[in-house]
Image 1 (cartoon, one colour):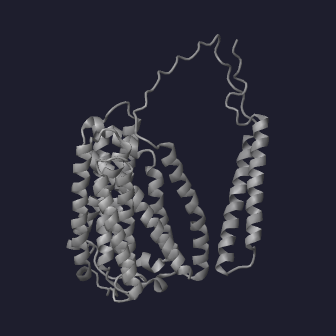
Image 2: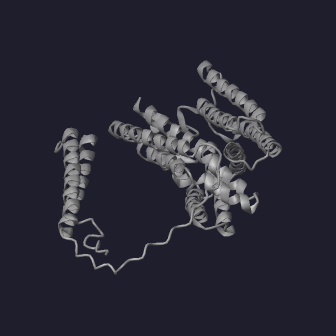
Image 3: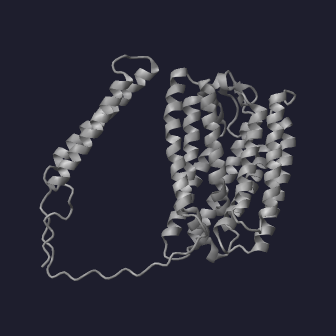
Length: 420
């Protein structure tokens, strides 16, 4: 059952990424059509939590690499080019967002970089999704095809569909977070994107049977009930989003769009599980050894609450409508009666460096030994010993730093407080 736990972690991380990073990618794409005075506002709204949203993508890669290595080995070589373009676009997107946020006013180049990179990331993700659903050609559990097989009609339609879905999530988020969208405009934009999402869902769903080489077993009662239940929930959520666009409360369209997206992902899983990569690579075949599965489930499972806590903290801190902060002028520095005397050289710095290097080496050694223990290869040190070593190293680090702080090693202004 551990392989299904790893599969569930991968699906949960993927769903969180699509729901969370989907809306800020949609906001980025919507900024391309916005007026210049609105683009900075859109960027500031996204800047509150975009880094936490993208953390879920890292968790997806970690779980696939460590928990389902065969699926990782089949999918990754088949989508190298769109994945590389996506990663570069993510970097450029963050660069444009942070530089635009740090600028004193509107900067057209950084704003366009943020919006264009958001579009590139979404298109690449859609192409990857289309390549995975179409089933990468494989032989004996390894990728066996050309470097451009990811490009297909179904992949292009998946990219277009994902663009529309992210735009819909972005529009719903903007209604909730901004005052600039008037009710008629929010209603018109949101409902148009909702219709586009419905059309693309029908087209992709009808083409999936011919594009996907695996056989869907909807005649099985449990699978059929789960699939049609997901479809029903998505339909109800879509109707709520249609009604909520342009009406208060402003949070309702985003909640409905989120529910609709999650239901669509669950419906896709219901018709394909236990197949991970079409046409026939299942969870059991793609899973890593049991010891790796246990280490992964514990490690990633313990990380997820912290990422969720960061998301919740960011949402709570930046709840409500966005308002442009008014910056107060920085007061002038007080005049000094006489220049500062140079600070004496800090004592104990070499000792601090040597101690930290030794503690770092000790941590790396403990980690290496723990890998052998959890893998069942070596009995040099057990999990309890690893815990004791780690706690000892941490305690030594803290005690040493506190001692050096009392000695003034970290005081950059030591000896400089000689103002008259």
